[in-house]
Image: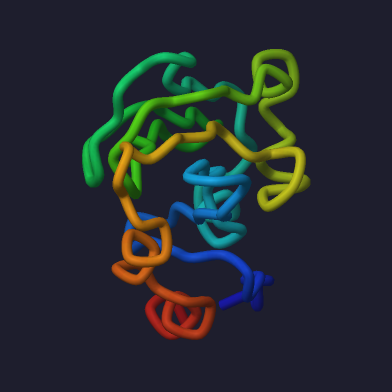
Length: 133
């Protein structure tokens, strides 16, 4: 199995999404290096539009590769504040830079949601690495 990078400032899900805390109650979401490698060359990404409501654990988009189509699951519940429009014309960004330019969408957690508490339910980098290696 190839060794992949799992940044320690991110949280991870068993479904291979990562979560990066941003400003306030906003988090940025994408898929891991492990997931993009397993999918192969990504040719299309569908993510929720700004203003959409997403629920933790529910499918909210798709990643299509030359091998298969896989669901994207929202790690947390909230309202989508932005989607990465660069993926429309360059879905391969998910392969080349999964933790940077290949991010997928941002979610603002509901009022009163403690971001740290919400993230505490997700895996840290070591936990994720152990789950996939």
